[in-house]
Structures are given as C-alpha cells and as structure tokens.
Image 1: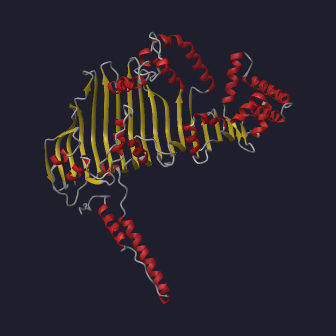
Image 2: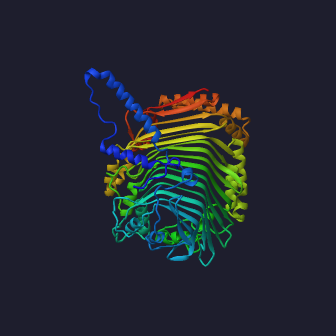
Image 3: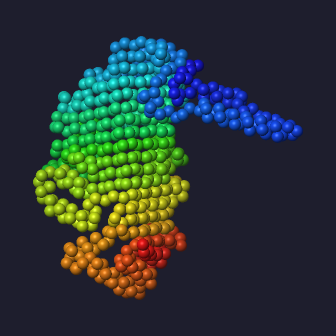
Length: 632
C-alpha cells in the first residue's frame, strides 16, 4: 500500500485507512467485561479509555480538503514511483490526441513531471490545449487501459491516479466557420485528486431523438467516475466573431470535494463573471420549433427563424455561439458578476443513470434529484456600466425533488436592488433606432410614473417556500417581500390535488386528464399588505393625473366610498360590510390589511368557479374569508 508523506498538511488518508482496517477486525474499543466487585474501577477505566480514544480521533481526523490544499499547499507522495507516461496517455479514448515535450521522475514530489503537454480532438487536430507543465502522482496505466477500453467493471470504481495537475493552460487554433468564429481559453492551474473510474456500456435505443446519443454519453461519463477533490484557478474563455460581437467568461477559482457518480459533497466558485457585447446584429433565435400549420408567412420579419426546425436551431447555436449569446444581451454591453457561490449535498447520480439508459424512471423512483443547499453572494447584472439588478446574498436551504417534480424549495434573498430606469434604457436600446424613437413617449411616461410612485429603483428582501407531497398531492406556496420605503407583501396558499400515482394514471388515460384541475381543492390562503409610504404616493399621483385635489383628499374620498359601498353590499352578505370597513380603516390610517381564507373543509376549484359565476355572495362563507386591518 502506498502511503502519503505525513509532512503534507491536512492529508492523512493513510492514517484513516489504517483505522478502518482495525475497525473491520474489531480491534478498536474491545468490549470490557467487569466483575461487580470492581464496578467503580471498571467505570473509571471505561471513561478513561473513551477519553483517550476521543482525543486520538480528534488528533488524527483529517480536515476537509480545500481549494488551497490543491492549488497552493505543497504536496508529495511517499513511495511514489516512476511510470510510463506514454502508456498512460495512450490508454485514453482514441478520440483524444495527447503529445508532450518530455517526462521525468521527481523523487522529491514522488511524481512524474511532464513538459509542454498538448491535447487535441482527433476530429480537429488543429485545435489544441497546451499546458506548460503537468505533474502526475501515482497513475495506474493498466487500470486506465482496462477502464477506457470498456473491459473493466461496470459497477466498481478502479483508482486511476493519486493526483494530477496542469499549469498555465492555453488554447491554440480555436477557429471555425472559415475563421469568422474564434475562441481562446486560458487556465492558470487545474488539479484533480483521488480520481477513480469504471467502464460503462450503453444499450442501443433505436428511434431515439437525434441528440439522445450525446446526452446519454454525457450522463454515462458523469456517472462513471469519482474524485476526492478538484480545483482550478484563473479560468478565462473568450468568444468573438467577424460581426464584432464578443463574449467572455471568467472564473477566479472553483473547487469541488467528494464527487461520486453525480453526487458531490461540496462545491464553490468565486469571482465569476460573464460579459457579452452586441452591436446590433440580427437575433439568431426568436421562436423555434413551430408546427407546419403555425409557420409564419414568407414576408414575416422573423420568417426564417419562426420556420426553422429545432435541430437546425441547435446546430446554429453551436456554430455561432457568440452571436447567440450577444443577441441575448439586447445590444450594448451586458455583464453578470457573482462574488461567490457554494453548494452542499447535491445528488443527481440516480437521475443520471436513467438518463444514460434513455428511459423515463418509474414513479416508484422518488429519490432521484436533490440539489442540496446553495448560497450565492454579490450578484450583479450590469448594462453599459450601470448595475440594474443586484443581490447581496441568496440562500437556498432546500431544493429537493419527488420523482422528477420539485417537492421542497426554499430560498431567501437579502439586499436586492432593481433599477427600472436602467432596465428601460436597455429595452429601448435593443429595439433599434426606429422603434425606440416611436416608443419614446411611452417610455418617458412610464419613467415619470415609476418616479412618482417611488419605484424607479427598489430595494429590499424576499423569500419563497414551496412544498409538494407526492404521496398525498397536497401543496403549499408561501412568499413574502419587503420593498424598503414602499410596502411589504406576504402571500400563501395551500391546495390539494392528485398524488403522483394519480397523475400517472391520468397521464395514461386522456379522458381523466381534464378532471385533474377540477378535482384540485383550496385548503387555505392568506395575504397581507403593509404600507410604508407607497399608498400616499399612489394617491398623490392619481390626484395629480386626474385633477382631483391633493392625494390626502382623494384618499379620504375613496375611503368614504368604500364604506358606503360596504353597507350596500352587506345586504347580500354581512361579511362584505366588515371587509369594506377594514379596507377603509386601512386607507384612513395605514398599517396592514390582511385576508385569510380558512374553509371548514377543502373546497374544489370547480365549486369556486361555479359560485363566482352564479352566486358570488356565497364565496365569503364558502371560504370562511376574514379581512383584518391592523394599525402600525
């Protein structure tokens, strides 16, 4: 067994392997059989043994692998031996061509050091990636030959290498479409640790969609390897075309730990940025995939796009990625920036296995996807140097699925801002000179309205929670938002509906599908609106637009009308008078207006629809609806 140099900080896997072996033999913490006459001494001995074991565990337990461990910390492999680098590269799939400038063994590192390494696709050898240096620790060329030839185990992972790093990676010859499309890539450092893999085989799927083969292979490859950690730094990808469009992707650092066939314990990205510069080129894709009967007329301005089949559209996106991405920017320079993201406990391995088979999983497979917990900090959307949408942080505490249906999702946004003025400028710029001039009065009027209402630049916090019980069909949605110096809003609804099993039955019998919505029920709902300045501005703006005096005068007039209307409506249902009084009190005094529907039993939506059309006055009792005003 090859061990690792204990001088390497934070890496003690050889110690843990030894402990695991002892555990299997039952040599750790043997059972103590104490005679009653020595009970106290036995208890003391047991406590002392437990304390010593706990201290030993704390001293030897490895700290989690980090990006710094892979990208910065020195590393050496104790007992590392020289191996045939050419044999290792030859074991790789034949669609990949590898060349290098020479290899030698470094005894201090316990690794092979390879200079001037190049990678190219056999189908396009002129396009290459070149690394100044590669360092490879503990590679097993024989295992690679077995795995990549397809003759290895289809279930068990075989260790391929201990660690691999590439330094100063750059691209060469990334041009296509007769040189009108260009790309360049650079990477400061890439490291992968503890790589293992298995062979895979795909059963033929006659009649599958054109793109099925690519997706199946991607899913199969993602499910056929594992690693302890991977990290890279200084990533940059730039795209440009002869029309002057430019797109750039940059990542300062990325890291993942504990990947197993599509499941990953932890991953992070920092310094993520994308910039797209468009100079008014025609959008590549507007609408695609229309049926023959829905094709646009030949003189339609987007006829060649509307009438394009999906496969052709996809091919054009691949051939002209710069134009496609730049067109999405809407003209000018659009940038996306993220300071950092983190994700934990992501699991998609089971879903990948079914995708590789190209089969829809049975509904009994309810634990297919879990996107874990995610955090994002410092998100910014910037147009022509002006930030218009920013988020200080976003926390996704749950993102789980039942079968393939989202069943639990929770997200909270802190410190978001949205600049409507910049957004309207971007929209107007993307319309082209003629349409922008024609629509200028409408844009100016909208800008004046937003300014008067205090909505030209909003800031606040928000959250959303979704739950769906696939076994019962019950679902709940709750969301809230606080728009600073304007208002806060909260809404929630609970509904009942078909379970996953019932949906499956209806999907197989079209005669039942129409009953799905009708059979859904409303179990409860709530709504709350708290004013913090918006209502005053809304009435002031309405009064100015209609010449109705001051905003306060108009507010009092509307409040009075609501009270009178409530008294009249009370003849149909006394609850309506109470609703009107609560709303009028809100208009007079501000604060919070809230409504709650709590029916004694779930009410079918078909029943609600019928009542709203034939006897709307019965809805308050049917829903057990209450409306309440609360002062600040």
